[in-house]
Structures are given as structure tokens and as C-alpha cells.
Length: 257
Ligand SMILES: [Zn+2]
Image 1 (spheres, helix red, strand yellow):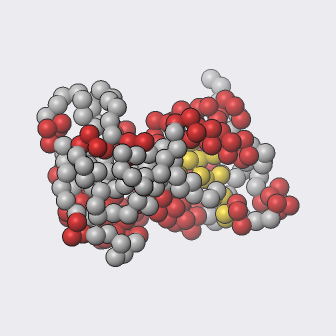
Image 2 (cartoon, rainbow, N blue to C red):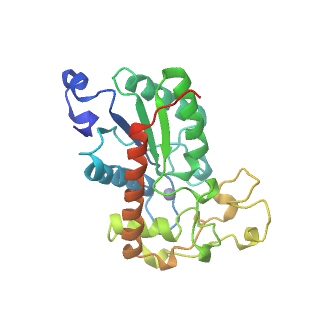
């Protein structure tokens, strides 16, 4: 059986959730995404990807979705009024609280599906902290791995289409037709940074940044060619890949050498 945890009754939990269950927590963000996208983009992508996974592998894997955590750590965007963000401390504590509750069920596997690149390093830390504090097997997956964390973006964006760029805008255009304001889409790629050997997105030197450091428009990438057809392709291949990742996660056990 698979489904959404919030939809079952309390007394049904022991019957529905077992040692085999995989609990999935979608994490989004409500943050500025440039002039062409609403602030809900990451939450919509995390939620839609998780729903599609439930449809896709729900009869194969005992998969249970937690409600989407729509607000997370977006302090790289709080210069822009209206962005909603937890502090690092709050976010870690919220995740710890949720994990403690998950650990009261028989489930042993907690997967965080992250739709917001700014969360990645924190979520890696949380995976270990939850493992230590609550004994759960923890995993972090992404619909697309953020370029700032070793993922890729298009050559036209010099590998630095990290926020509101071609791929993200296309996926959103596919998921929410008519909600992208393409007439406001502009190219904002940090070309000066691409010339660096080490200090750049995808480079070996990590650096602290806010989206304001790259201009007041708030995007980093080039959404001008975004289209729903590309978005469909990207979304469907992400779901395929994540389905495969969940298959492996559902069987994963540590072994002593
Ligand atoms: Zn985003």
C-alpha cells in the first residue's frame, strides 16, 4: 500500500506503515525567482515530482508522502521582500522534530526530496544528524542536482543557470501553464565568474553568496528560451531517475565488512 500519510487515520498507521515503508518528505521554498516566476516554484516542483513518484512507483514500493514542507532555508533571497525563510537553526530543528515523529512509526527509511538548491548542504547535515539522533536510514534526492552542488546546467548558461534559468523555468512552465511571465524573462548569467578557475558555481572553491550579489533582478541563468516541451522532457526524466533511486533506497541496508 502507498499513499499520503495525512490521509489515513491514526489507528490505521500501524497497519499501513511498516518496516518496508519509505517515507518521503518533499521540501520546497517560497522565495523570489526573478521577475518572470512566482515565488512558489520550488514548492510546486517538489510537490508535483513527489506526486508523480507516488503514481509511478506506488504499487512497487511502499511509499508514503509527508505533507510538502513549503518554507525552508532561503536566506540567500531574503533581501527581496516577501521571501519566506527559516534560519539554519530553525530548519534543522524542524527537520529533527519531524524525524522524531517519523521514528514513532515502524518505518526505517526517510527520504528528503529537495526542490531548492539553497537547502542542499543543510539537508546533508540533517541526514546525518537524524541518523544519529533517531536511528532512521536517511537519504537526500533532488529532481535535479543543483549546479552549486555538482549538478549541471546548460552550456548557454555556462553551467551557472542556478536560479530561475532555462531548465527550472521550463519545468515550471510545463507544470503550471500560463503562470510564467515570459515577457519579463531576461538573461542574467555571471559571465565574469565563468572565467575563474576555482571560484565559480561548480568550481572547487565553495563561497558564500546571495542572489543580490549578482544583481537586483534576482535570477542567475537565462530563461529566455524556456518552453513547456523542454520542461516536460526534464520533468519526466527526473521522475524516471528518481523512481530508480527510490527502488534502490527501498532495499538499501548497511552491511558490516
Ligand atoms: Zn528554484
